[in-house]
Length: 263
Image 1: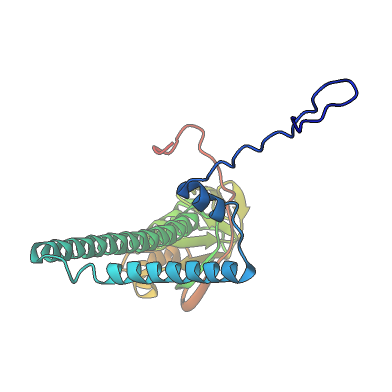
Image 2: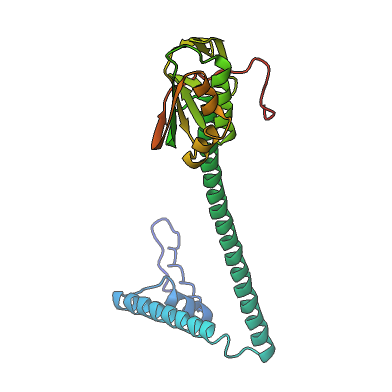
């Protein structure tokens, strides 16, 4: 008789399923399972960081030593070429230095020339101002005084005296407060003399700047200005001075037609 048992319904009970045999892992799979996911401890992490820093320092040191010893392992031809390049660069720098020094010298000379030209221009302007009567002047010279009590001194006699003074080197002249310039003229009659249209009266006083040793003898030559005036009963006195002041001024006038050729 069979040992199988049936339930009331007459059905055979199910047997429990048989378990499938576990699939065996390969060696590679077991290795991967052992290292992943990683299980790193704190100590291992610290050691890894220290090793990384140490390796980085060694790499930098090796590279530095390689750079310093680059010339040691160079060939003779390479060393000669490097030396030539250094010499060429030094020469170029020296040439540049000389060029800059030359430019500095040129600028200094230009500045000196410009300053000298400016001084000469100012001096020339002053000289022209003296001749034009637009600026005051002072210097050694003489004072010519003509006293005419009888009114016999004519304008042409005073003009002759002025011409003699100019020929003797007079640089600035003033007559009775009137500045004498290139176009100065004398007019009128004896006892009623005019200078540039302005009436003056005796005594006629000439303030003259120039070399006294030349001016005084020019007036006293035989038959000259002094003797001619004395014949008209005028009294003439010439006095030298170390500093004669000529401060009568003329207004600066612009010519009607003449213009500087530089304009």
